Image (cartoon, rainbow, N blue to C red; front, top):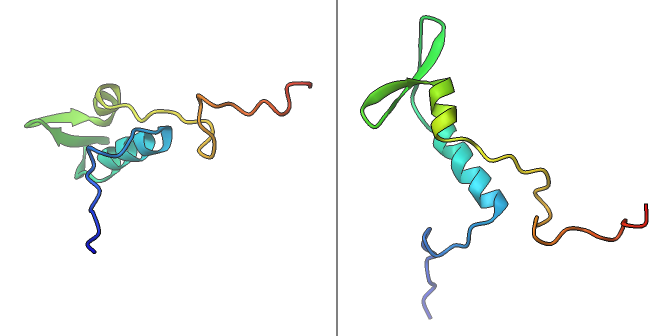
Length: 78
């Protein structure tokens, strides 16, 4: 009858979802430009973009269409 709404806590973590969550957390913030540097407020403090990237890095994903734990082995003969 009714449809179930998926909770964010119930969704499994994947490389793509981890990347999108981290990227959205960084991009969907209020950034201020002061003295030629970008600042944002984090936990009540102003931090620079460099400090923010050290505290909350965006993971690097090489292939979005394939899981890292299941690599493509079709071209191992090369």
